[in-house]
Each structure stands twice: as structure tokens, then as C-alpha cells.
Image 1: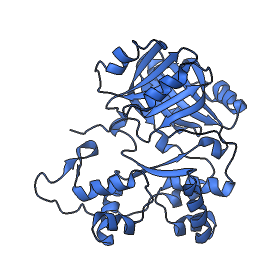
Image 2 (image 1 turned 135 degrees about the horizontal axis):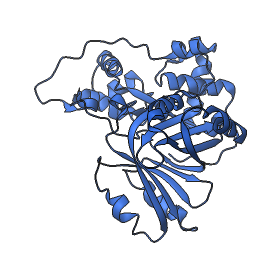
Image 3 (image 1 turned 180 degrees about the horizontal axis):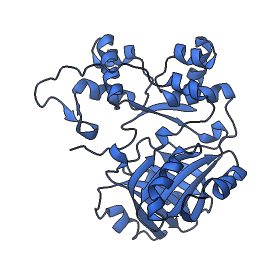
Image 4 (image 1 turned 120 degrees about the horizontal axis):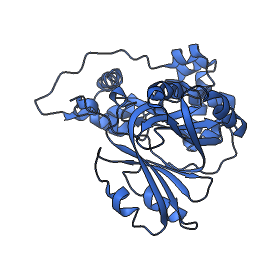
Length: 343
């Protein structure tokens, strides 16, 4: 998902609807209306409008966060290229399925990207393909060691705490469905078996997580009650995790900064947790390399970014900060890191 240029900031009502979807991507119009003080008809009309023009998409993230914060293999890449070759390299990276995120910074010759890879492997992209590309002038890579916050966990701060609590998923935790024949399921996240019906539901919801149970039942060839029961089961197990895709500029947050931090080892965990709890931070990761903590954050303006750097980061054991401002999000896919198996 690439963010195109936009000068349009959503109304406060629409921003609050986006925030409601962040709490529960499948929230009903009736429940959202009751919490936000709107009519169900207004909620349905505005959600339809936001989805119809592509301003907002609700998708399925395969997993909210890897178990215990671990990562099954992902690299942060910082790539500098010859001026005039930036778009060519960005297009080549965007075409790769193993590159879910690509950001271009305001320097005009710098790309930040994420590459999925096997832990400890000699990734061909990093060790051979990019270094042998003449347009690439330098390449730095850092392995994600621990996840403190994923973008799917970030919340736009336009709701009160009681409103967020009321809008959270409230589906019951039913008993697991009866097991089919041995070998009928396939390992899902964390080694949990996913049968054919559940997998078909997740596949159908992946590009549009707001498909109704009736529409899903028609696609799957099962009753609507069976589909609702399976959806509740998936949600109870943490396997039905939604993510709202929206240009942050539409939320009045036009400044996105990448932060490369050096933190003393005895402060790393506490600093990572502190960043994850900050309202502006939508990504925080412990990594290998000299900058052992990477973060990404949204701000309404440069003054807010300065305040974050000069005030909010103080006293966290950070010894060095490098800040890069994103000029263009060239690719945004929901999944950053693969789930870690419990086995």
C-alpha cells in the first residue's frame, strides 16, 4: 500500500470512526454508534464512504505480535542509492513479496525497508543482490531481535479510555470446534492447527476484514451460525487480528520519523517498553547493530517531533539518536514479522 499525496484531513467524526475500527475492525455500526454518540445510519454511511474511496481499509494481520516479543526473522534495511536511481530501486524492491515495508526519506537518496528472512541466514538480497547493484552506494542491515510494538497496535488518540474499552472486541471465547480426522488441519500461528474452514475464512478476510458473516457463509458453503462460531473461536485464540490501513496524514499526522537509537544494555528493555507506550510511536524494535533500538512515530508537525526528541526521550538511557523523516511510504503490508512457533 503506497500513500499518495493528500491534503485532506478527515473530520473529527471520521477520525473517531477510524479509531473505533482500530479497537475492533469488525465492530458493528450499532455498537460504534452507541459508543460514539452517532446514529447507526450515520456510521454505516461514513464507513461505506471511507472504504469506497480507499481512504480506509481494514485487513487481517496474521498475528498481532510474535509470542514473547520474539521475531522469526526480519531485517531492517537502510539503502542509499545514486540520485536519479531512487525510483528504479524502490520499484524493484516493491515487487518482492519478502519486502513488506518501504519508506523513502526526505534526503532524496535513502530508502528504509524491511525484509523477511530466515534467522541467521545469508540472505541473498543483502549479501549478493543489493551489493552488486551499481545504483546502490551503501547498505546497512539490522536483525529484529524483539518486538515492543507493531503498527497494528497503534491507536489514534481521539477516543477516551472508556470509549476504547467499550469498543474492544467482546466476542465470547467458545469451546474449540470438534477436531476433524488426524492430519485434517495445518499448523497455524504458534503451531495452532487451522482447519480448512478457518483457513478459508482468514483468507477471505485478509483483504477485507469487514466482510459480513453472511457473505463469508455464502463463500464458504457453510451456515451463517457455523461461520459466526468459527470467527468467535479464531478471535478468542488471537488469530483474528485486524489492522486499519489509513494514510496518517488523513488523521492530521503528516510527519513520520524513523528513529535509530543507541541504548545502554541495562536500559534496553525499559526504554523499548516506554517507547511502545508512547501515543506517537507505532513501531518499536530491539535490533542488532550499533543502533540497538529502532522506532517509528507519527507527529502533527515538526514542533511535536522536536518536543519528542528533546523532552520525551530524556532519562531513558539513550546515548545517541539519529532521526530520518519519511517523505513517501512506497509500500505498506500488514505483516512485518512472521509468528514464532511455540514448539
